[in-house]
Length: 245
Image (cartoon, rainbow, N blue to C red; front, top):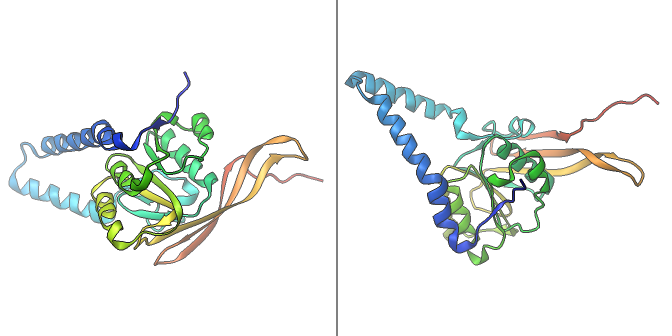
């Protein structure tokens, strides 16, 4: 059976995301919490709440979106944090790898405003049916991204280079902070973004002189944040091999 990414027209985005993903997960969380405290004494309930608060302060693993290990090591939070915005260079190879990695592990990804992003690799290595694309969001691309952030795990917004005005960004950031997704902006930047990912393809492997196919890619990656700048090489596919000559 051949799967295709779910393409949602702008006018249907809000209803589809809230009904299909977000509302169900919130309800399940509430049920689990009620079952956990049922039958506990007052002191035990207080102790449980304190434990949960300490776990929240530590930044639990479930607050991070499943990310490529090589990239996660460079990010200050140890991964892409939910309800946070990260700016990324326009490197389709890296973005597609992120989508493959996350969807293969059960995550849902939204792509807004990037009609020419090739997702064939996701069909082979990830789960293309877990990708929601809104290729032509019109003038409301940020509103669409904010709605998707309510229910998906990762939302990628693509736009022309520049920065959104604080007035226009305010409602978008409010939706991101109240949602559940990590948001990756490519091209257009939201104000106050604290982490940036720079990436470029530095080497291809598997291609000979006019023949063969690409079996591996090296990407030079640089992550900048208020704390530090981290650099590394991210290898996907076939790794570099030393050969005797």
